[in-house]
Image (cartoon, one colour):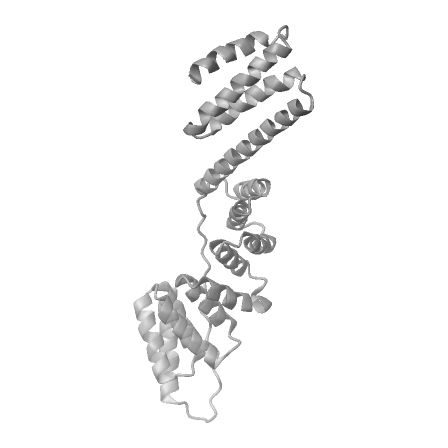
Length: 300
């Protein structure tokens, strides 16, 4: 099983944008709301999440239309693994400012954290006109499409992430996993190797590369068997093809499940016997005889 490589999409806390006071004397509640907001933002940056949560809620109590407080309340709730509450906070921000892109991203990430993958895709896709140059959005969308079993769309988004951040090993690794889901072994190998050139000490990537090389070997052995089978069908007196087909069946048996091995070894035995009939004087005839003797013992 391919091991997923973990990546993190950070939702940056939105800076405050204060409106000018309409009168000369400041509103004490709004002033306190600003102070509460700034305290919450500083706590969030220090990852004092419970204190940040308290301060943002106090800021909203004092100034319910402070969109930044709603947004960063959502960020904090996401960090605290409370995605349902985070959704509510981001929705409040979007009610105040419908084109608040960061809150739209936050809502998408909250849906993702809550397992609502289709809704997450919908919200994050809506941010692409403004966030299309952010490789993290492409990475998250690619991950969502992988999780919803849509590998080609996942490939498209991970390729975009690689274009935007060619030095990001994680983007290459994720692209490789999406290609694997799509059944494209060669592209998978290329993407994993590209990532390992950037980050050669990633154990999961080496593991995944090993799995895919093994899968490629199996595909090549199957192709090898099919090619020699076709050769002897087209030219039944082609002795060397029987010998090579016997070798290919042995290789396939080594890669197969235990319950399949005996049948494959029996097929190999038959090919070496046919080879001996067609080419008894061939220099490889003694080797074929040894193979026959060994295989007869294994298929008893």
